[in-house]
Image (cartoon, rainbow, N blue to C red; front, side, top):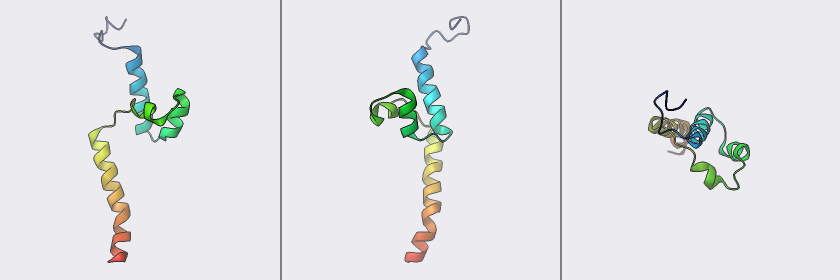
Length: 75
């Protein structure tokens, strides 16, 4: 079936990477994902996550916006 769809390069394990990445993007904490997968360490779980560059930049911007009032008070 995979070949018929034109995804002969796709492996079942690739779907695990995709599912974990989508779950992380949806807000699942990495500790929860580790328990779901049965991984012994967070380092193993993190290897499965492939965050989007735009989401990383957005997270940095959100953190900066959150910290802005604190910086303004200390000035």
